[in-house]
Each structure stands twice: as structure tokens, then as C-alpha cells.
Image 1: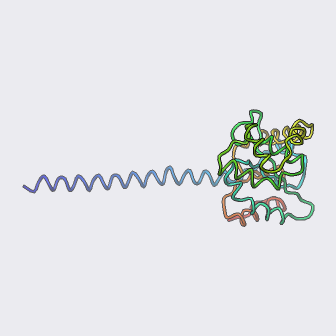
Image 2: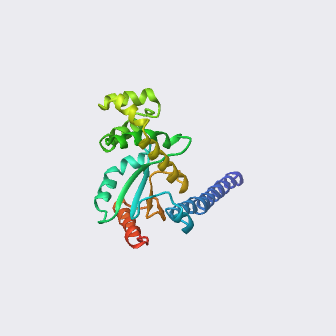
Image 3: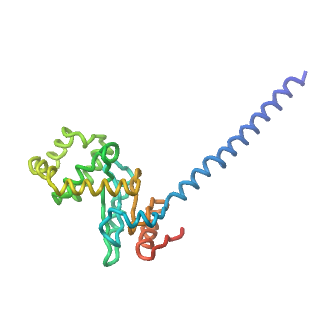
Length: 224
């Protein structure tokens, strides 16, 4: 009379053990390996020939490739501003918007960034652009949404339209697209240091800033 219940108990324990082993194996072979791969990709040295042919015209720079649609870019805005203030003499911090020839996805807001930059008013409207795209989920790449946003932010529509058709905006968009394509950037924020390092945040931003400055000044990563 005890054989059947005993069999059920043994069967149940066996299922639990097997499930635990499978879960452990999955964690070690898939999750941990993926995390290790991500860490390996957090810093990439650019090939020397690619550095020589880089479209980046400025030397001694840290360039942030960001997007108005990037949550992490918005969250780190204050930290990035603090990093910019720490830049040594003779170096430069530059923000460029992700851009591509299709102007889709996170790159779709590049024309707005370029136009506001040429108008000299981009920094003071960056927070509003982040908020509108990320929190309010309004697509500012669509002209009707963009024009309403411009009006709400006190930006003259006639002046904006004139600037958007200027040679300066065309050149900035072309430059950002060349940089995005040359370095095969499809994630934001990505930091380009001295044309030769691609860095993704892999630690607390203060430490990450130290890491970027070490690459800039000493051409070597700062160990965690």
C-alpha cells in the first residue's frame, strides 16, 4: 500500500533535482556567458586604418553619440555635463546625435538636433526634447508634433524652418551620419575617445568618467 505514494515522492524529488540542475546550467552557460560577452564589448579598440580614415575632424576629444529617444542618455545628462567640466585643457567634449541615411529609430531626431544646434539653442531645449520623446512618447520626427513642440518651447517656426534648410545643418547631418556609419554605432550612448576607442558604460558613471579620461590622456583603460 505504500509503494505508490513512495514512487510519487521519489518521482517528485527527481523532477525537482533535474529542474534545479537545468536552471543552474542555463544560468552558467547562457546568462553568465552573455554578461561576460557584454563586458568584453564595453570597450573596443578601433583598427588603426579605420582611425586614420575617421571622419572625425577634432583631435583630443571625447564624443558622445546620443539620441533624444535614449532613456540612458537622458538619465546621465547631469553626469555627462559634470564629465565635460572635468575635461583637461586642450581637450574637447562633443555631443553628436545618432544619425543614419534612413533617419529611422533613435536616429530619426537627428535633424531636430542639428537644426537647434545651428540655431545655437540646443542645450537649453535638450531636457524638453528628452521628456517629450521618452516620457510623453511623442514622435518629434513628425512635422506636426515637432511644430507644436517648437511653439510650446517658444522657438520661432519660421526661423527654425529657415535654419533646417541651411547648408550648416546639411553639413552637420552629413558629418553625424559619417561618424555613425564609420564606427558602426547602433547603440546609445556610445563614447568615442580620441577617434580610436569605443566605450559603453560598464560601471558607476563617476568611475566611467575616470575611465574615459584615462583613455583620453593616457591611451589606456582604467581597470575596475
